[in-house]
Image 1: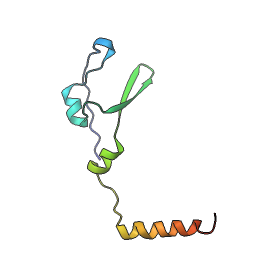
Image 2: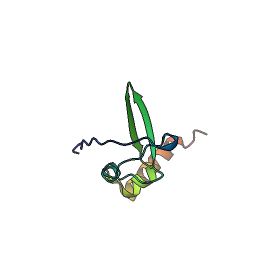
Image 3: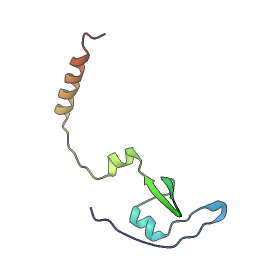
Image 4: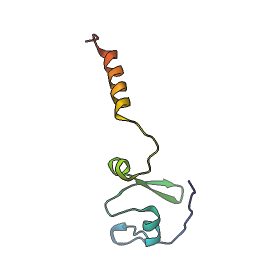
Length: 86
């Protein structure tokens, strides 16, 4: 994955709201209501998007594949570990 570097200016608004420039919104595909994590490193403020796990599962890049038969096999293996232990 290629890292894109973009540097833009923004202003702090009323009640200290930070308004994201359109270039940033488009590049990161953020939408109103998305959650972010804000860290302070010296004089720097780092804002990271916290992606919704459900949204990622439905629309994110897929990196693994599993079939129903494999899920069933793993489930049966795990259940057999606990049979008789109660």
